[in-house]
Image (cartoon, rainbow, N blue to C red; front, side, top):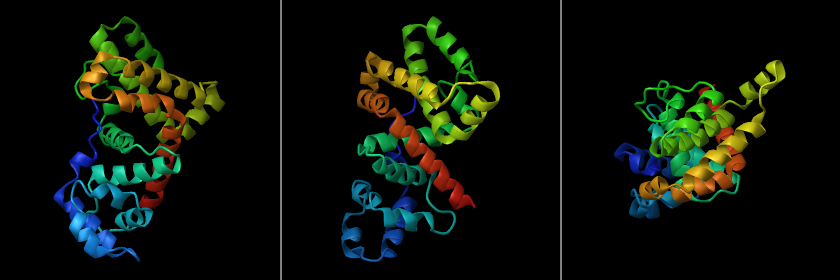
Length: 222
């Protein structure tokens, strides 16, 4: 299962990179940064957009995947009015894991089935045992958030060409998956009840934030 662990994955090199980025931001207090910039002191620094801009402009090898996604997701979520840091942790971890080969089509890193179509995922959900049903509900939320956030143009093109569902369909399924998962005992055991509940309640905002991240990554790569 995907955990809300992006900030826990920051490396020592990430800390040094953020400190260096902060030093190049006009008006920053480097003395204060040196005193507070630890794993527990990064939160406030990474809420500051100029620091994130400087971080993204840093030379290769640049930030780790966890830091890169967290910094971008946090800024995008704040712009959408979603202020819970654990939500940024979770969405960044989602992007990190779904970047692995075929992970986006499996309910776990290792699973016998891959779901390339929503109808297959929903059919699996209808016949699953309770433990697998929980994992499928989470994946339903994760997969529709990833698709709607990073591939809205593809969804719209399929709608125009073949009459496929539009973004509202994916948002409804994502809300359904996260909402049901948040009520499951396994979510409480994993400490993710609050994350799934926020994801269900704010799904359109999360999806829009991930689209902003996609666009910013495209500009960075250009």
